[in-house]
Length: 96
Image 1 (cartoon, rainbow, N blue to C red):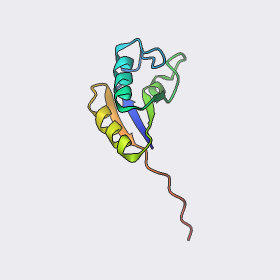
Image 2: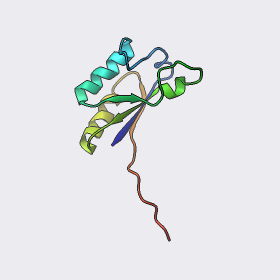
Image 3: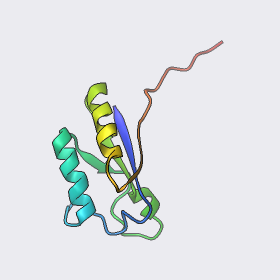
């Protein structure tokens, strides 16, 4: 199950989850470790013009619904998050 985390505007400006040196990255990585999940940015760190909006979105893969619900609840508590939601399951198309 995938949880999507949107950070507040400007928060991801100097963030780099791969290195974890900045305060925001350290906070996010600590919460992920606490929950036993890994974080994956939607886009790489802001190396090129125009990627700031995409780099402020982080994807979290949870092994089950219970963990996903804990991830959503915990990340919503953080002052750096703007929006956190569980991606709905894909449903097959209904014909007719």
